[in-house]
Length: 111
Image: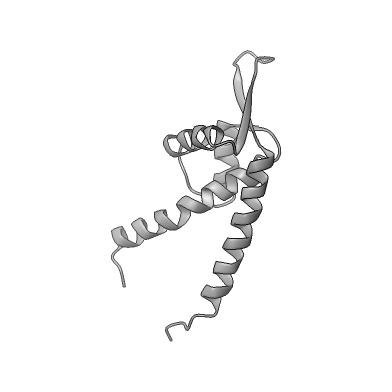
């Protein structure tokens, strides 16, 4: 059985890709960074702002997200939305994730 630190590292690696998928799926409806962070955490995707904001910028640069500033409130917020390309990627990642889950379920378990 791995030590706690080793287990934590492996869990972080596993979650890294799932956070990308979760962001793409959640941002089908426009959202801003802090609200997205709360939505992710509420759904069990433990991440922090230092991880999320660079991820959002990278996904936007890759064309998977679009953004616009909302200046209607006292504090301007940058809202993100999944682009058409991002929706296609989210569907492909969802299909892949489900196929991996099926493959893992077919593996033998330790008694």
